[in-house]
Amino acid sequence: MSEMPPPRYELHREIEDTHWWFLARRRIIIDLLKRFLPPHEGLTIVEVGCGTGGNLVQLNKYYRAIGTEISAFAADVARERTGCPVFLGDGLDGLVGMPREIKGVLLLDLLEHMGNPVGFLSRMHSSMPSDALLLITVPAGRFLFSEHDLAFGHLKRYNRRHLQDELSQCGFDIIYISYFNSLLYLPAIFIRLLRKLILPLRKGARYRTDFWFPPPPFNRILEEIMGAERFLLRRCVLPFGLSLIALAEKKGMSKE
Image 1: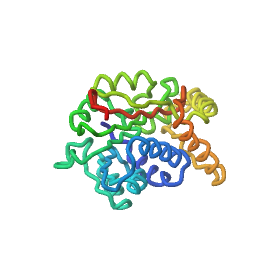
Image 2 (image 1 turned 120 degrees about the vertical axis):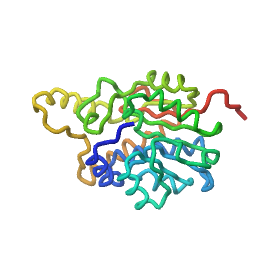
Image 3 (image 1 turned 90 degrees about the vertical axis):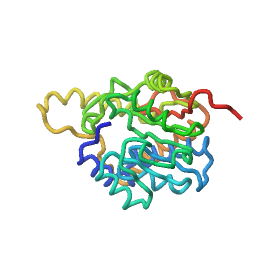
Image 4 (image 1 turned 135 degrees about the vertical axis):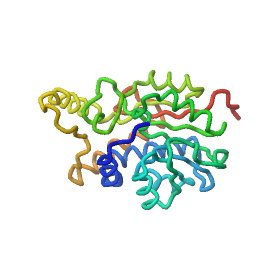
């Protein structure tokens, strides 16, 4: 797994509690998790690659939240701001004596940083308890790979079949999979494609991200638009979007 460039961790720390995309994505993730893993303070949830801890704060309201993080800088920030245990590492290997307690593992926008995501998912499969659930989000739309992805150290974007195939290869059954961030899809496509056309003209200038901070009222509107998708996702799967979300379990688990 590759680390994000240090300035990007700083950016995450600055905006992940207020920027509409982070807030709305968090609503969608927690809503799906609560549907399949009813909240209980005794249930242990691990976010692998927790960054500077923005998700841990919210997860800790419903579960016992733990993080792992490959960046020592980000792990220190996450511990300080959340009070949650955060271990240095890129998986569950450092959680000695704890794996049996784990009921949920979250990989949130992490696989796109991997040179060998199948190898990583196979390692996760081996280290997860047999009754734990795996929740994954990844950026979607291969044709949308852009300067934003390069700025964050992304190696690729996914489509639904691609993510399904990687999970299946590693011994997971998919319980649920859908695109999301769909209501803002068309304007986002326009902006991304326009920036892809402009990028060669910038002649090697530093990569820029799409994370600009809109005025507060507009920020709130965007949060509500994207966050409302959680109600749609309770009833159906969305056929397109800027991200994918999947919930999986180990193959062959008994259904009660």
